[in-house]
Length: 89
Length: 517
Image (cartoon, rainbow over the protein chains, first blue to last red):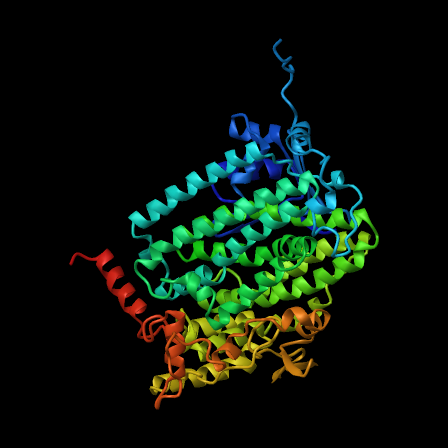
């Protein structure tokens, strides 16, 4: 199965996003590089708004992630509650 | 009567519908083919533009909000970096040459990308792709501007970046990235989208921005790191647009497949050739390295691109054929490129040097199959010669590839001891190529590529000297005249890093920053 990935700048906001990703995707693997963090997950990945809000302790709009996003791989699907990445193979 | 306000706030999907297609209209007194004159001639068949959807579902109002936030963060850091003399915190002054390469080679492309997306956004009849192209065209001009602003701080202290745009349009090696984008914006709107949106942004851009920017961070260059990440945060959207374009075109009509496959083959190769500059930057120009070119290629092309093409197989799309040759070149590309720039270091707007012992050991470890056998002996010889006062500068102009415009310096696939030459006769003229792939691209559209502005040919024709130059006078020095035409100052902007003004100033200023004087 191919990996999907998402890479974020390392900062205080994305720290919570990464925590949420690890909680929602048990097979996720973290790859830390200078100033950035890359999360690889086999097949598909989901980021849930409620999990991020829990970690941050404040309301969070998933589109806020645009500010800290570096790159991603896979088909994107986004609504108010979930951001998903997947491959169809 | 007041308009009835809906009780519930619109959801993301509904808002996207309202703010894209909801703002579109069907023309009543002009014909569609008059409004969108370029949309049919490439042979791509689209039956329903409404099938297009941006999976991020970003609308213009949200776009402005998040872009404004990115800008505020970026400019705060640029100011702080400049105020704090951040340039003296980079690993060593050799690093700054990567910034010179970036501003003269890449930033002008951001501007051309802005023009390209403005153009194709206007040409597509669908509201979805029009909005996405509008956002990308705004992103691209933002990238050009923020790069110029960030790097202008280096221009106050270091040589070679004083006239980057003049350089971009003239300097021999900068014709490689320039002609790449010129090729794309002179193609039709669908080819442009596949070329830039898909092949460059989706398949290759990670190799430019991620290692470069992470490398900048690793080498203490906060300014570059910040504009790079700020730009890259837009790239994720561009990549998604690129992938969406491919899926959309392929789902619309089975006849589109062979056209799209040809474009993917062509532009993956064209883009890869441009990335030669990134390969040598990663392996030679970053004093502290994050990963080798070969490793980056394996992660971002072989693994990630592999996953992508496996996914697209359901449409009949296959991995571009050039991937086989690229796999053979990954052990050699950066070394052959750096050797070339070391040779032609008298005609560049940045400095070159030979790697030191530690760096050679790193190269040996990263390239066990090739470095010690093919490149180390060459470097040791050059280093020896330089120590004796014979630093080698090649003054003979090289033969260029008519398609990618890179000098013919690459070796035969599978035989790193033999230079690869290909040629084609077309209308009584002979054209030269660096590879089978560049040759095939030319053969498909010879009328386009015969018009290329080839720097070496132009120099020999006398078109690259300042106005009023008389090349027939005794003792005429063509290189000196060409450097004047490039607006480069000999001995200051070019030549070896060792003994350069940049090296001397950096050492002196860094000394002042850590001592009382």
